[in-house]
Length: 333
Image: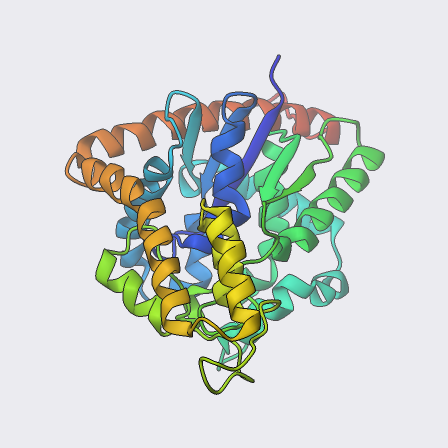
């Protein structure tokens, strides 16, 4: 029997290169080996969109397009819409009794995302409880492995703690998940920031047209200490070369560019142009598949419906075990 993967994204807009190296790449690679469930976390996305929930329908569609575009196969991977699995809400409520407020306040991922969002009227309770909700997502599918970016490691550790406490208090029903990092733990933003983030506007999206990619690449931060193209430059910590290492398949070219950059015999414009060429080659087949599915929306909706139905069946089975373990499987209904 195959082990299981659960991973997912909040549908707050289309996915970007950071998502690809952080998680999507591993999902595609592992879909043949694992029973794969990918959660489209629309309930959690309401923490950003509670004033405009009508945006979620379009975002769910866009995220699914990205999944299909990068090579996730609906015959192997099930795309599950969170709000259509009410058992997740039930398990989240049970888990709330296993976590303290102080633990949530210490979670570094939550603290960083609160800082990025700059909540002006205080932090919504739904946002504080996001780690608990995510733990329910992972455990209700009995996931063995969770492909994530480095910033999500505290969330996985929170889920592991909840599983240990649940199994100790009630019965060994739930599986303690393991995190799996992507090939690049954290892809920097095009502005040189520590992380590519939609809220910071420093992203290259998987569905971006060539002109948008070129504009973003040519505006990327490089070595701030380098004034002239003939000045020796720093490669380490330079976002343009980080992207070259990840996306430029011509490794000989990358090494030659690094050598010339250190010697001051190549300018930023040429280095960026070579990066654009590499990224355009990488993104071209993704754009093509994305356009195919965009023009066949009913096929996409059917993929979502089928995946969600399979996901709910798994969730229902797990919840029967959870209620039995907690001695709340009442016999009068």
